[in-house]
Length: 449
Image (tube, rainbow, N blue to C red):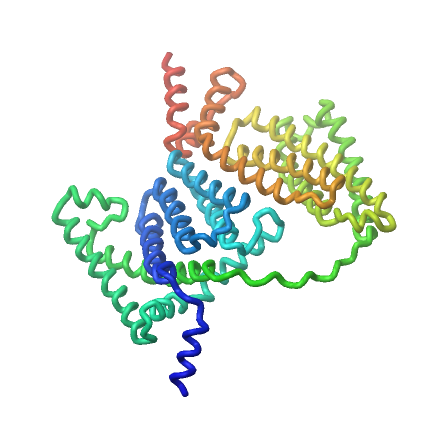
């Protein structure tokens, strides 16, 4: 009876292919490459290693998915953005942007992976929280499945699964030991593995193997997770409250406050009234409220995007709400111009920095987001998140590929040489990395001339 049940289970299980059997080996390779790039004892940034890791990741994902990969516009965009940012890490040497890009790549690559597997659509607002939720599920919910798959591929049950696992556990340390011995014996051969540094002390090689073996099961779990068919869509939830009264009072009050604020900006900031200089000078006046204004624009955008709904506009008070939202966006645009004006005054006195360049990027994203939100008022069915998120990511990729550190250094040096800046912080520019050295060399030549 037990034999019959076992046979029935084997017949109802999903047939496995070489892709399922290759998952543990792919995961082990990715784990080894990850620790080669980000090992705790590494003192330099991997640069090209980040790009290689991104390529290897999507290569493994496509190998596991095969023809089931959903190569839509959203997934292709996420893959291309991840590769572009990895390439930016390889070309330029800025530590600050490398750190930020590693986090951006981690999230965008995860979103692209789940989009390729058909589990989410990057063009929807839910894609952001869904990526986080799916990432935790992928790493922790399929830990035992790769080893069960090895046993099923060998058609022998638990004993064969254990044998396959034991073979992997034996093969990896033996291979590492042999490579270390050969690297120690021949300097040319060791140079081929300089990135992995197998020619170091043996205890370091052992720790790298251990780290790879610890990380590999979690990566294998993620590969098994995306290989499964995505679950069926949940039934549609009942519509939420679509009354305009939920948003109209707060929007009307904000409009009144913003009208007063915009009047102050037009008179004292844009108009050049002397009261502005009483707060410590134009630069200090500009610096004092910039970040608060940026936060306010995000609040206004969120309010408009959450409240914009065709059914809500069609109900009682819908027209008034649409008008209030339109006025709110127009006043927010004035606030954004005020923030941009303030930052321009501040940069004109103190020069460009990484943080100030990032704020200019953020303001460009906010400006496009305001336009997208305005169009959503006209066409409530418009997918505004797709435009805002896509533009933000595309502009971030363009900024990184343009060489941000070189841009900052060139701007500050050029402004100083032209007399627009009273001083240039050479210590800060030098700390940004080798990409700033060209501008600093021009500065030294100008001083010596």
